[in-house]
Amino acid sequence: MNIRNEIINITNSINNKSGYSSELLKTYDYGDLDKRDIAYIKRCVFTEIENRFFIDYVISKCSDLELNKLDKIVLEILRMATTEILFMKTADYAVVDEAVELANNLTHYKDYVNAVLREVCRINLDEEDLGDEIKFSINKELLKMLNKSYSKKTVKKLLKSFFYKSDFVIKQNKLKENNLKTNLENQGFVLEQHPFLKDSFIVKNPESTIDTNEFKEGKFIIQDGSCSLCAEVLEPVENSIVLDICAAPGSKSCNIQEITNNQSIIYCNDINENKIYRIKENVNKCGVENVQYMNFDATILQEDLINKFDRILVDAPCSATGVINKNPEIKLFRTKKDVEDLVLIQRKILENCEKYLKKGGILVYSTCSLLKEENEENVDYIENKLNLKREDIDFYGDKNEFIKLMPFQKGTQGFFISKFVKD
Ligand SMILES: C[S@@+](CC[C@H](N)C(=O)[O-])C[C@H]1O[C@@H](n2cnc3c(N)ncnc32)[C@H](O)[C@@H]1O
Image 1 (cartoon, rainbow, N blue to C red):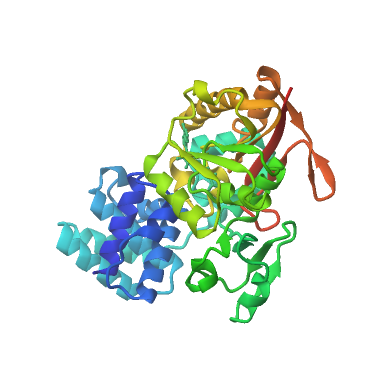
Image 2: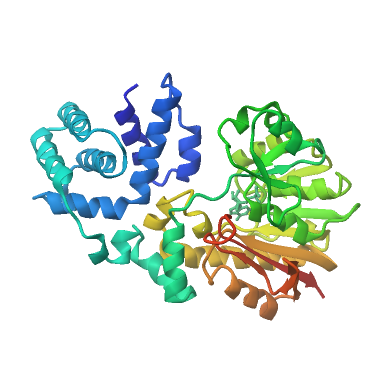
């Protein structure tokens, strides 16, 4: 296997929107490549996507041909090599040689690639002069939506935060383990208590946490701090009947059953049949019991579920703008139309879930979106159009209308949680 061929293959899959980059990079078949090469591929692909518009801008400054008229493979070779020259420590001459050889094997543009990359090696840019779209590699429509949701100052902080790494957080699974911190520290891991979640820890040296027996045996799950809050806000109690309507891969379902010590019955649904096995895998690994599986489109009303549940979690499909730092392609591809379509889906799911909830039952609506359309505006919609009353949420000792975690605060991803009770 050739490292640079694999970089181009993965980048093409991301360009074709075959899935989130974090998932593609994790599940890609790297064949016989060693750990160092795999790490290089991941870093190069991620950096290129994270800086795509800036990189294209640099290439356009160094090219006589217009980028949108270039052969797709040639453009990808140039993007990869430009990433290596500008952001990685590989020697420029080696990068240019490798790229030219690849261009020679795959295309007729060897001399052109050579000429452009020699210019890239010499380029001197004043980044201050660049607009936000290029500087932060974000598409116009998404930038406009962020500007509509936040002040200029907050948007600037968000744009910078898209390049931050969130803390690596693990959540102890009390169904299986009560002594996680000591056990992992005895193996050399450095753990810090999470600032606002009692059974969660920030791992300072996370490499190889997934190789531990504790992980393989489901004694902890890897879960951003903000996510496990959903289960707490839902307040599941023993003997309650719970619906997790958009459940895959099932981490929040596991959190819920953990709180009731497996003493509630949880129905896990997802539209995607293939993802049901991911829920089952997590449930089995974590020792979670009393689970029923369902596989339907939550936008379509299921008459047999009406008035059946004491608790419902709607962890809705969303723009995922709160996890751009893990999936930077969202900055490039997410459109206004996508968000409008998602809002319709979210509202339809909420309308149906209101019917599934018993009187006095609790519904939690959460997203990993930063956009007001999917968060605050949906809260208004629920309050005004559905038979659900918003409840304040206790967080950090304060009562909050909802919890909104921003990716530039507290080392978490962007996340939104709101809570309602049925009248
Ligand atoms: C944000 S993820 C859920 C994450 C999950 N709650 C967890 O914590 O592991 C949203 C899920 O909704 C599912 N989904 C999308 N549209 C749906 C629909 N119309 N009906 C049911 N599930 C849907 C997706 O397949 C995806 O697995």
